[in-house]
Length: 375
Picture 1 (cartoon, rainbow, N blue to C red):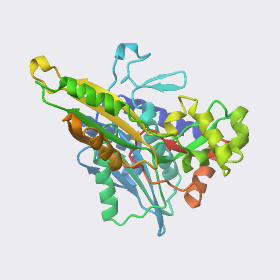
Picture 2 (picture 1 turned 45 degrees about the horizontal axis):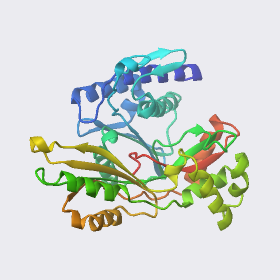
Picture 3 (picture 1 turned 45 degrees about the vertical axis):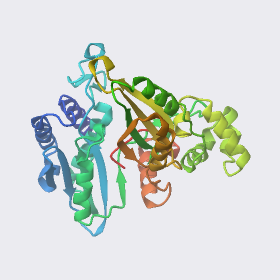
Picture 4 (picture 1 turned 30 degrees about the horizontal axis):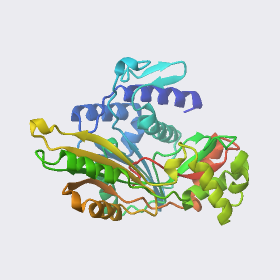
């Protein structure tokens, strides 16, 4: 399959996939229809590979390898976020419109474009008679956007089959300018994710609304100290050749405490860079009407930087609110992820792939601020 054929297939696949309203927890028939579309678009993958539908919506696909090399695992998710304010979209979000070299629609970036790129590449290689040295696994979940368990199920299946991959590749990263102080775009590869905690404060409807507000003021006043983690230091070091202005000198001397402190101060001055430097707490929702005897609630979200622990933070909140008589319910708790190494064979393979498609582009590790199935 030549480049033009690959592009035509990728565009058609992405347009058709974007037309499917694959909301997490939505109608199973929509995911079944997407599975059928993928099998028709990529017949060699679905005929030569082992395909397993997991929990009716997710897909686990194995392309068998010719040798006993360690396998590779590629992730994506098929679910999308519902499209609000559809009248404000340039094109209807589930039309899959193809206009002037772009495919428009909900999920084209997150993550159906990634999914179609993976399958197009594999289909093209298989057409040319290729067989991987080791097994290739595609694990496509169906509820990533709501922090669901489908990828955990897929992981359990891989673990049950003793799959020990050379690397796992998911979303996370762009070719872009890291900060305003970096003159050229770089390929940023996510090697870690922040942790997250979501919790709700409640109290009795008849007596507690004012007490809850005082407790909320106490929680909202909690602060975290900014710091330079090893991931952000690694990003700055890798991008030192393109750094300019106030960040030029610190980026070249990140091993020195003075320069590291200077870089921290510079980055902290930018709202866009700040989330990579500290844990952050935000009030998500206030609800409950005391007049209707509804329990008043405050819901908070915390993104945790490496070095801060989710369990320790919850204990901190509980201790601070003892005298307020409120109830704390933890709805989600995830510690910051492990940090993948920005060196070794897996990293070098990614560097090679980037350099083929984006010649002379620097490659750097970076911290993913949101969450993904990679966890």
